[in-house]
Image (cartoon, rainbow, N blue to C red; front, side, top):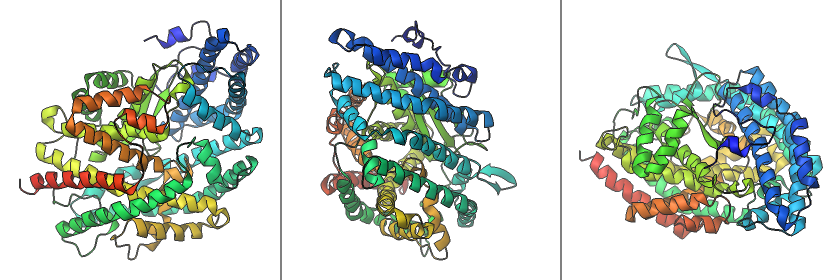
Length: 586
């Protein structure tokens, strides 16, 4: 594999250090005046069969430079939300480089498409590129930049949310550990505290929501589309299914998954011995065991997760070790760090970076396994020659990450280098399967909320109307939870959903991908080595196949019908029953 230094030979760029918040001086030296001549040279280059490969290579590298600058500056604003210099650098990028690069990228796309030449392996990327070119409007460039700034504002608001807990000021995210306390009063107190803190930001979030909604309506109108949903569908390059398919998927989830979750909730209520399940009763271990604590110090999390990856596949373990050695993991939860977790790519450095907020709960293990799957996807697709081939449909990107949660599950016990005793590993797997099943209806509710909001923008401009719609959807998709006396908290819940504000409509991908991941898992139950082999081969395809082709390469079917969903739920319930027979008879 060639190094970043070799790829940059003869260019003005210097390879950027892998450490995300360091060596900012290198990043600040990039201005549009540095990049514009290289874009112009590509625009002026006559496109022939002889020049096609140099054109694609130059374009790929230039796009990678802009993407890495964007990624690193974005990460810098999240690792410390009070770092004013980081925010200034990111704002400068958004104001000075991003809009110009968006316009230049559009010109290069049009040039390639009009030339009638297609490099090998570019059929599917060109299909998506045609959709992007058709959607582009010059007048939307400054609006899209403004949207990025509003999204960063959301991160700042939530990143600054802290509470007083046991005589300490802690980020709200750290309260998650107490949600699993065996003491019900403690669970209730921490849950209420988190929601009270969210309500303190209600006015600021409502104002931000209205500004976002109005801005997105303008973007859609400029593109000549009847709704922002129609615009966003095309922007997300959803070429293999339509909005109506997802509305039908919502109903399949309601009909198939919601009854299964209700059955699990009834079992939980019986085992907890409570008259009704309250919102703070959904995460505690119903067997009465103390909360799973996978580590004492956050440094143990990557060390033991690395051992799990090595058990799954030695090559994957080596890639994760590279990330550990090069400080490409920011895992701990701390004050003034934005909430959430993600994996982002640095394409010039040829490295992925993982960001999350670990608080010593089993969900931390699942999150790192999940984001590790994204990282492996980045490594695998990096071998493709062109940047445009590495733009992976999110529906399949999430298969890569969610599959890793299932593939890593058999190795959670300490005998395999993991975190738990054999009995606690079984508890952890039940916890994961329960949470995964519940995720389907929850995510369907979030997606349905967005369909409503962007098809009814005048109603959605009223936060009270949003509150009412949210409460109705939540009660429909997450039944048997008693919200008595908590109407204010229930109605406010949509404000805490990052996807609604920052990445609209990007959430149904999780539902589609979960169904694909369950199929990958089913294959691994029959033949682990074969399933891992298919998984790695599929990841190496990057974005060079459509969704059906990518899913098929991984040994799954791209589907959202009730029958396929029912098969997946049946496997999960069967596995839960088997694991619980170990837990409750030991």
